[in-house]
Image 1 (cartoon, each protein chain N blue to C red):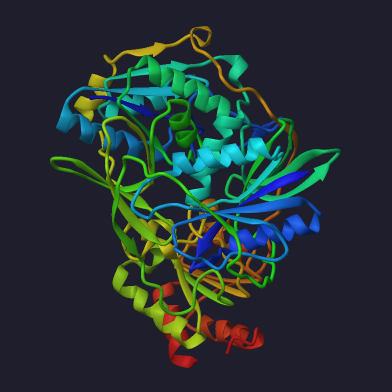
Image 2 (image 1 turned 180 degrees about the vertical axis):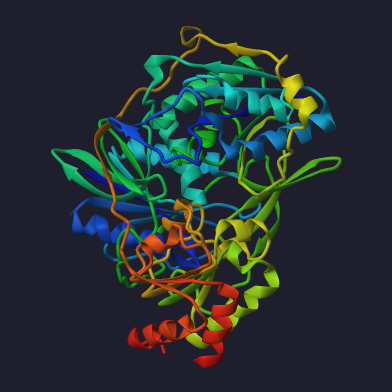
Length: 305
Length: 249
């Protein structure tokens, strides 16, 4: 099945979401090429094992329509029948645009897929991961948006050899580009993640979580509620619209565990939950649940480690 | 400025979602998806600056129309909706096709969406509508600043970026971007007089078809039956012992 993997660049390299999809494509022996969209000048995204095309967009112009035009052209000229993309902001825009051009509705939140009798069959997570849903795609081109961490990333030697295509600017100019600062262990790769929720009561109390994170060399995450409240930058949000994490240990502090949060952390290997409310849904996921006030339990842990 | 904002009626999120043959079971009484309140708020702020009309468009079983009423209570001027049995189980592209045709009938300059519905979560409809309408799509808006121009802040993978809103476009708004207003008693009464008009499917062009065949649905058993301890002051010791056992410390 002729396949196009839509790649993305993070820190001048192929994103882990892209590497996860490449690994899966290899395991299914798909005939694929990679087309990566990014704005960095010379990302290291080439490989001797597949053909890479870099669509270079401008960081100063909102030009995803033009990028999609180019992608549509490639898909049609090369008779691509499967498009695989990580479920990120950029790829959601692009795949949605492609779906109109190709008249093929995409499948979102895909966590696994397979080829059966020349058709693509997808497994996707619905209702915040409470149920899984299987779909057979019957259109001539299948479009999949794949949730991060669905597969293990491939370990690849990357180089600078690829074809580059530039796209025209649009009339919409981008300005004030802001990059959130990254410090300490990163959520996606950390073996230990400590997340905070509304049960921390106020922003100042996050210092308790920070102290614990420092002691355990853990990354810090948060629920949408506290990110929306401005306690933490969006890059630290765990859940449906934020990051998906699968650490060895996940410590949920004052998190009730709405399904939208669960979907981002439920595959963690060992889950410790601390929450006042005995009925909080987070306890269903927890390997160890402490029914108690996070604000009194965490300081005692900090003092005794 | 004609502002069209999309609103979805969903089963009350306080209740458990159930499925019938792969489709979400929809009770007669559904509520306004909270995600849409952010889009409606932005529509109302734009109206206050530029005047014009705010039209709510919606697709799906209308039922008691509670959710549509809730959109009007916030301050939208009227609602157009499509409710047709043949649309049951529509994929995102079919939904986007119908919503874009509805938006055309409103002669919209700006079409506004939440980024994804709380029940379906496909998160592709705003962009698909933009492509159908051949308009630019400014997605994942997390802040709006209205002065001489309208400055929109977009959420990006690594942070954020800003753009000036063009005269015609589609916007998708993330939850938390603005503070949706709460209707008061007067707003609630006023909404009862506002028009809610059903548009017949036969008057719209459907430019997409079903390509997703439902195979199976399975509820996951998430419950782990883990150890649960009521803290009486000493539970921290259990956590520390466990962290040692897991070789974290």
